[in-house]
Image 1 (cartoon, rainbow, N blue to C red):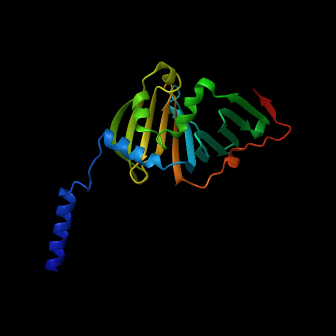
Image 2: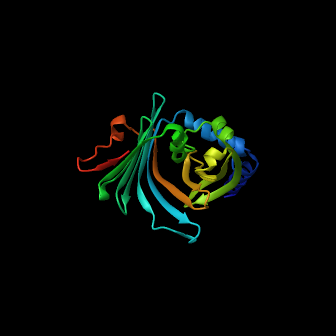
Image 3: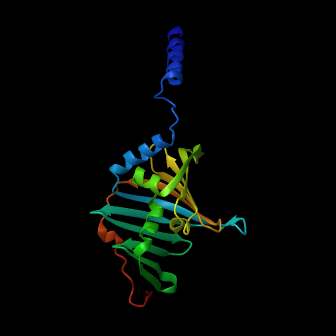
Length: 226
């Protein structure tokens, strides 16, 4: 019994004094972790829950659930978001073209990203995003740690430096998981202070994703708006 207590005291002392245990990261340290994880990240699949906050009403909408996946291959970005509840819709980004399909009203909107190409990256901020690229575009502030539904996360606030970027979102907040070093939640704040809150669950990093999964086959009776 005495040996048990001596070992317990030794372990507690080690945990309290060894800098490898319980060390809090500063902003650069966190960005290094994100950067390191991103170097080998080429694809991802995840379940998502997203809900919109309307500031003037001070309330969230009913929310939506679905799936998100992306693939980076040969310098190209492929992204697909499928909402399954409460109504079906699909957003696909491929080859610089965006298609938003609403089967309920048999309508699809198509347009080229063009100068808005960076807007496609907002959903993927923190998923393989280069450290120096983030620092160039955003003013960053580490808001500390936060327990998010049982996950330990670092909360990072990102304020766009340019008016062009802030025309879309004046602030972005990421909750970075301390095991995978990718976001498990993000908050996209619009100039009106309305915001979209997106949570990621069952995240599969470097999942098997094929380019063909980003092909959106539209039925013949769908009206396409360009």
